[in-house]
Image 1: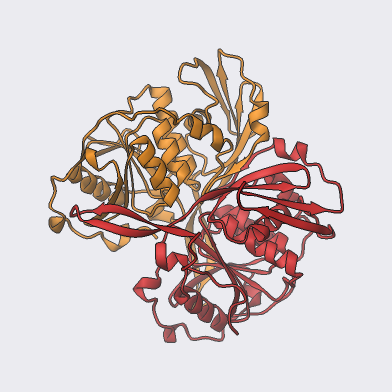
Image 2: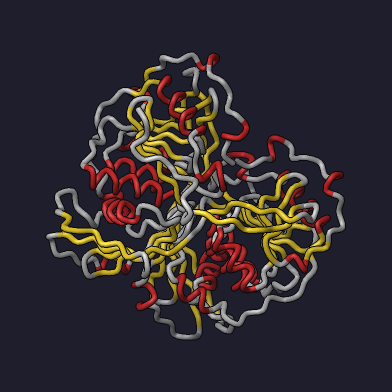
Length: 283
Length: 283
């Protein structure tokens, strides 16, 4: 099955050519990703300004608000208005919203992006049970191979993170952004607006598995989170608490399962998996 | 000259051993970095909760507040109280401070961490001139080699960023953190509290050169920012506006100078520079 959404490395708005001089003093022209502000409103309230490459502002806004617990599962969205000129997007709901108190509290999360309301997010995890699911290692290997060789802004310009919503061994929605949390939020927004089921999905990310990434995945209801990068101790601890299957350091034939081993079906022989092409290795 | 501050990969509080199963189902014990909350207060006001590995909380607090423009250059700090048990640190100043309005506005910056007051930070750059300085390419090569081979939490446990304050070809202060902005803020805090001059320094970071990283470096008064990672279009644009020397993609003999080429003295022959040892290559 082809991607429902795949990166568009040729999109003019997402990257530009910048010139520099290399180690030999020779001028080089380099493709570089853009980074622009997008201010997200929920009804009348300004919530956050995110620095983003700028694609899928509606998904980013809806997913950000959902992942921050400001847009509730049963909220009815009456409209999402994106204004490119003033770089803002307004999400409107039937419910009257006011998060003034929440906005006063700031949390700067590990590695990437702001969680704003980390305490609240942890609370949302209490008593949570993630759905039973099967994760075949053959799917993981297939996903890594497909994702790493899909034309992307990363392969074109670098300095960007990717998150991919997958089903079985097939990637469905591949989002990229300068902030890895934006990439995940765009996926969350797509799921909210398309009414997509989370129970049979795998979330793949190129970034590190920190506490906030684990919490977001669990809150989205996705039972499996995989990454080519490493993980933090708290990320592992929370994954074990909520019963999330956490897989890190997924490179070539190697990976490490830190939590939720019970979902893993080891149906592939790692020795038969090819190493990664040099071009596909993220750094 | 030896480091004034170097990473301590043996520090018990900064990492722990976690067990997982690898691709062959074999149990592995892995060193993993910690991630814990630290709430920063300025006098009576709670400012932010940062997720950090937990070392140098005083430097992190002072540097964060300085880089957010809440601690002014002429502010007199009367004390910094760190309480390990409640995971908080209070910075006290002679000046009475109140940043309630500022705290209402949130900015989520690219890639990593929260800038909170991005607009304000840009304003601080207007009319700024960074000091003249010389950057020899032989220094850059020496720095990359020394930093990449210095024992660190990165080499021990991965999934962590590093920032290094350097003078000429020698690294002085090497900070690591799960958030790369924390690492830079710890350096800023060290400079503030030690009264260190910025004009003759080079800042090296393992992370991407996004707009916020460039703005922070310029606000710290450091004329040169170098990284082994890539850069965003806006990061390059701001560096050019403020006349910062920006060097990215510094790996082995290769690098790319995007801005402030006039400070660069090309005194090393790239062909004579050795490639990086595989172990030292960050990913």
